[in-house]
Length: 286
Image (cartoon, rainbow, N blue to C red; front, side, top):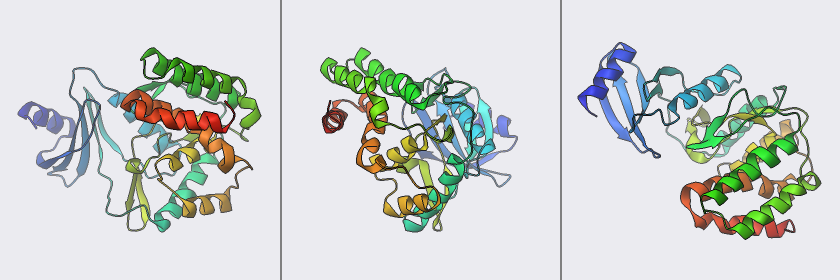
C-alpha cells in the first residue's frame, strides 16, 4: 500500500494505521484488512482507477440494508474518493447447519417486512454490473423486463449470449405468468447470497456483505442460495418452518429465477455458464 493511500485513509478516519494486509478482490478493486491505533479493524476497498468503480453505490446498499433490517451489516467508516472503509466482520467458521438455521431466521425477518413497490429508489449493482430498479407494482413484469430480458439483452450485445439462446429466453419471458407467482408484498432482498458474501463465526452468521439490493420476491433470493450451494436442507427446513413456500418453487421456479444470476455470470465469466441456461429452458419447454 503506497504512502499516498495510507495518508488518505488516516486523514479520513482520524487515526493511524498500525497494520495492514492484502485481501483477494476483483473487478478493479484493491482490498486490505486494516488495523488502527484506536483499536478498530476495518476492511478497505479502493478503486485501482480514478473513478469510483461502484464503491459509493456499495456503501449506499449496505446502509440501506442496515437501516431496514436486523441483518448483521458492517458499519461504514468512510465512503468517498474511490474508497470504502467498513467495519471488519468477525469470521472463523463454515456455513454449517447451525449457521444455516440462523441465516434462515434472519432472512425470514428481512423478507417479512413489506415495501410498497418492486425495484428501488435508485438503480444498484450486482457485482460490477448495472442493475436497473424502476419501481413497479407487478413482480412478474419487473422480473421479466428488468432482470431476465435486461440481462439477456446486455449479454447479447456483448456477444456473450448466442442469438438462438436469447430468442428462447424471450419466448419464456412471454409466458412467465404461467410459471411465476406474485408475492404477498415486495420484500427487500440482499440480492447476492453466494457463500463468499455470508460471514460465519461461532455457529452463527456474523455478517452479510457485498449486497445487490432491490425489492422483489423472496423466492429469487432463496433460489440464488442454491446456485453455488450456499445453503441447503437445514436452511430451507428452518425457513419454511417460519414462512412456508408455495408449491412449485423447488420443482420449477428455482431454475427460472436462477437464469438471472447465470446470465450475470455469462457476462462476467464467459460461455461455461451457457449450458445451465440451455438446460433450464429445455426443462420448462423452451
